[in-house]
Image (cartoon, rainbow, N blue to C red; front, side, top):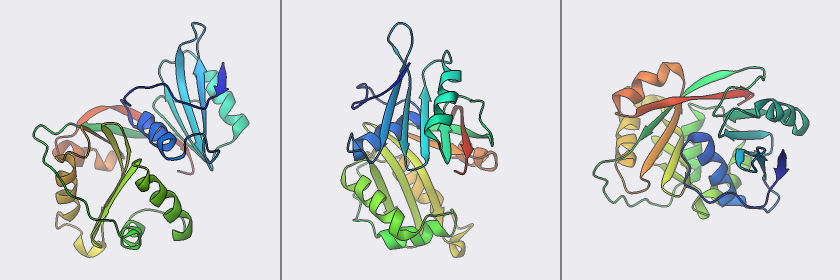
Length: 229
């Protein structure tokens, strides 16, 4: 059974989908800006958590007993995009590799207040971004509530969702003029060896799989996206 909930179970996220759900709740809670559901099995244990904000749906499945119910539920609530830690019978499936990095000797990192326009400009050279007027209020709100980190110097940018001791890196890139100079890699290494989090997660396309292996990220498994991500 899937029910709307006003609070999430208290636990440390252990995968990318879970971090995305928990950081979204940390930012918006039960304000109505985002919605959260829990699927329970016959023993009233949490079988899956689901979040939705605008058209983006995230699913963290703890076992595969009820994926058929989840698939039917997604068709009811509607979704532009779906991120799931288990494969679902939905169209336009793309497999992403999940990596994790735990710093052995973390160092203190002081972060300056991010320049959102700089960061947006850098990310726009690599990613399909929404209009700045849409992107800015959401990211700024998440950063203020400790649910995200944004770092940029006008040449390279990194954005991550945060909950507890975990960060999901969702955007890392440098401007075309710096391509091949290792600027993005230097920022990644600085952040991944900092005390911002104890565990860093990232989802990577097949073409970036070897890159994260080379940065000492451990391959944990796969996640799956559907629709217009």
